[in-house]
Image 1 (tube, one colour):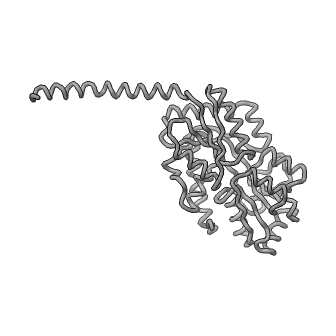
Image 2 (spheres, one colour):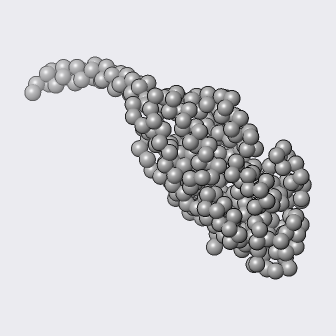
Image 3 (cartoon, one colour):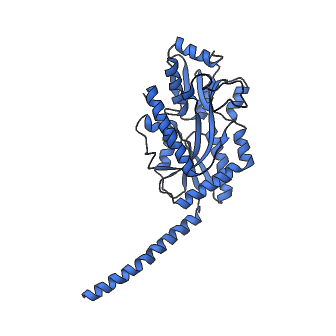
Length: 332
C-alpha cells in the first residue's frame, strides 16, 4: 500500500469517527428513552409482611401503572438489609433491577465490619421514600411496664432480657447497644432477618423486647394488648401513641433514631433512567392514597432529589461512625 493511499484511508476513517460516535450516542439515548421495555425487579431487603414490604408493594403498584411494565417484588432478607442491596449492587446496570431498603446497610454496616459491597462505588441512591419511627416494644413475657423498669431489670439480671431486632448491624441493633452501654446493662441480642418473623415470634413471647418500625400490624397488636410500647425513636411523640415517650425524652438522645427508606440502583444505570425512576416515585408519593397509607401508620413520606438523598446518607454515615466508635459497638 502506498504512502498516499494509507494517508487517504486514515483520513476517511478519522472523518467517519465522529459520525460513528454520534450514532452510538443517539442509539443509547433512544434505548434510555424507551425504558422500560420489560418487567422491573424490585428487590426488597426484608421479608414479606413487614412495613418495608407493604410500602414497596404499594409503590410497585403505582409504578406498574405509570411505566406500563410490571414491577415484580422480590424479597431478599438477611444481614440487616445488606444481602438485598448486595444483589442490587451486583446486578446489570440497565435499570431493570432496583432495590428498596433502609439506608442502614450503607450507613451502619461499613463501620461494623467488611461490607458485602462498596456503598460509595457499587450502588447509587435514587430517591428517598419515607421515614419510619422505631418502636421499642415489650412482649407478654416481659413484666416491664415502662422503659425505666426495663432498664432496671436488665441491670439487676444481666443477660436475661432478650432484645430482638431486624438483624445484625440493623438500626434496632445499634439502638440496643447504645442503650445498654449508657445504662451499664447487659442485654442479649436476638437478631432476625427482618420484621415479619420477628413479629410472629414476639407474639408468641419467645423474647422480652423487640424494636421494629411502625406499621399497621404493629399498631393493631399494640391496641390488642399483645405488645406494650415502652419508647419510640422519633423526632416527637406519635399521634397514635401520645403516651409513649421518645428515647430522647428518656435521656437516650443518641439512640433516638428513625429509619430512612429509599430506592437504590446499581452504579452505572444511565442518568435518564435514574431521573425517570426518581420522577415516578415522587409522583407516587404525592398521591393522596399513598400518603394516607403511610401517614395512618406513622410513617412519613419524603421523596425529593437523588442528590439530596445521597447527602442525607453521607451525613448519617458520618454520624453513625462517631456513635459506633464512642459506644465501642462491635459485631460478635
